[in-house]
Image 1 (cartoon, helix red, strand yellow):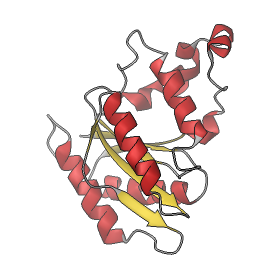
Image 2 (cartoon, helix red, strand yellow):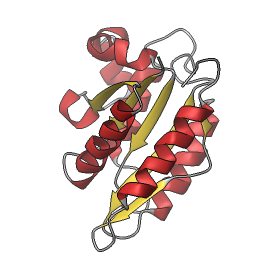
Image 3 (cartoon, helix red, strand yellow):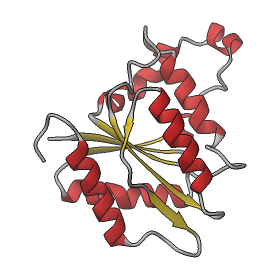
Image 4 (cartoon, one colour):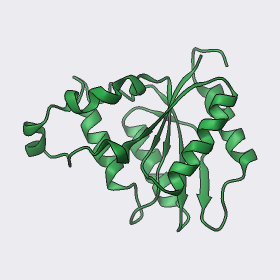
Length: 171
């Protein structure tokens, strides 16, 4: 069974989209989990903050979810890029292992957004950033805006594409 972690960086429309994606994953018998990083309340990463908190300790409560075969990142666009909570999350996770790429390297990923302004900038930046840390980001993505929500059929197609792209496991 394919293990997929859906990471959402919002408690609003992006959480709604993440929950819709979860329904499609479960329909296809994926071992899916939802990780709302807003609710983690991670301290703002800096070298000073890291001297006060061990990254391994902060990440350990959700580490099992990070052992997924694939990830789906659902994030709103903030000022033309990813929300600060997502960058903060990546910083702590990358500091929680010996090699900063260990968690996400060679993992398949899909990106999605529910944004008032279109969300194309956040998806472009996420694609570059996630590729940089070693992920294989599939070509299709989900864009949902407040005036034009992503059609259910489109979410279904992109979820299937992600599941088919995960190497080494049968659907």
